[in-house]
Amino acid sequence: MSSEGLGREQAAADPAEGSSDPRAGGEVSPAEGRSTTTETVAEEVATRAFEIWFDAERSARYNGARASFYDGVHRLSNFCVLILGSAALGSVMGDYDLLAGIAAATTAVLAAIENAFDVSGKARGHAALQGRLRDLAGQVDRHSTDDLIVRGWERTFNDILRDEHPAVYHALNALCHNQVCQAISAAPEARQKIDFWRMTFRNFARFKALDFPRIDEGDKARV
Image (cartoon, rainbow, N blue to C red; front, side, top):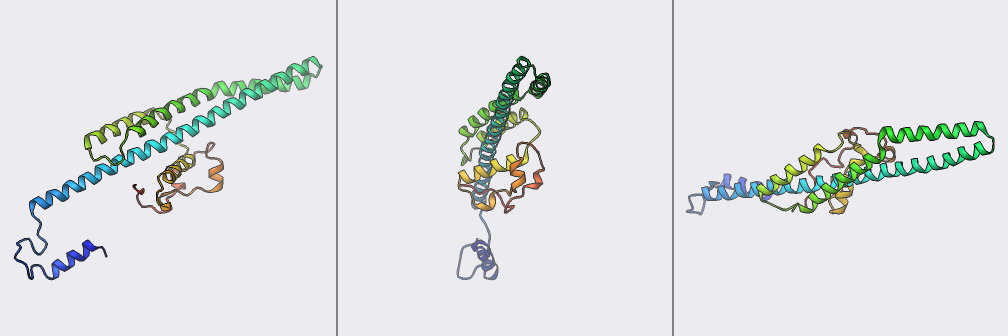
């Protein structure tokens, strides 16, 4: 039992013994009540500030990882197109019509996939979001108790989220959550569980948010 709980029990058992104070027995003056309320509100605002910073940092890491993934796919696709294009040209010159046809067809398919899915465009989009979120995370004082300022950060974060791609890859998101927890030395139980297969396919399958429970479903540790 907490010390606060013990204090309440003792006050109930012996409300005013040995005291002439009219507040004995658990009564709280208006001034004390206002002080407690002010402290509670300040704590709630500080918690919101921390959550904005945490979410902005996690989302920045997430978008950075997606940008790197799409950029890697784009580079690999271009490399394959160059190699297969050269192979097709060599096969034609060497009178290998079948090999030339296969290489040319594969090159066309890769180019079509690149254009249809706009891989390079997605890489640029995620990189831009990462930059905006990094800027926000840098502005946020995660210990702030100024409600007006915190509301401004919340509005900015929500505005950025409107531009974010709605299809979240939850395994990657959980990985970024754990990276932020590690960066701030949060308690291990604040992190999310990720198994080997979901970690391996984090950039290919979306999975479900419920597939990644907290080690302990308690709140994120604040530092």
